[in-house]
Image (cartoon, rainbow, N blue to C red; front, top):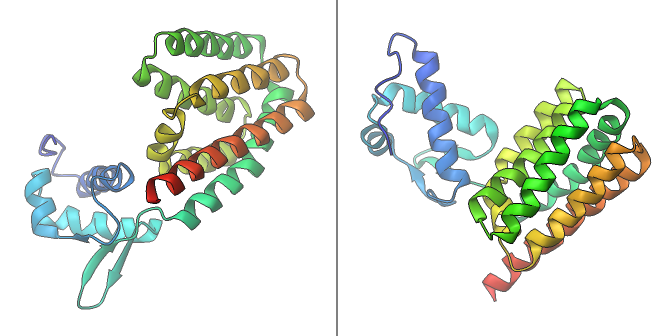
Length: 225
């Protein structure tokens, strides 16, 4: 991991935020596992910063619910557990469906064209079996709908939820046959959006997320058996 020393040390808030994002990514990517302790001295050395921004970053992580500060034990990683995944996907079904509804009502012709290009690229890279491109475009498809719904609060909420489960979304999309199904579902959602059909766009988005949830939970159960 690259050192963060290049950040302006005269701006401690900026440095603490970058340290927060680095540690958050390590937790969400599974590099730091639930139950592990966050040791300030170790993280300070690893990230190439003093212990002060690490300490502040840990406090920020506690506020997100990813870390719990336990008396006499320090900062313990909670991460994302099974119930969190269930909750996040259920919340997504409700509010991402709303985002698609609003996007169908509000999208411009330019935005429709842009989203169509993302779908075309998804299909192309799926044929090429390019996992990196598939994952990137999958995220981009959803993020564009968040943007096109033209609601900053909804976009912010959905972006945060997507960020929290990015590791699990990669696992789901990368499972056998899921990428093809996901892109077919994306194509159907896109067609409803392009036709400015909010009812169908919302319904298909809810079904798409429900399918992703079922696929992911199946993978998790199989890994544990």
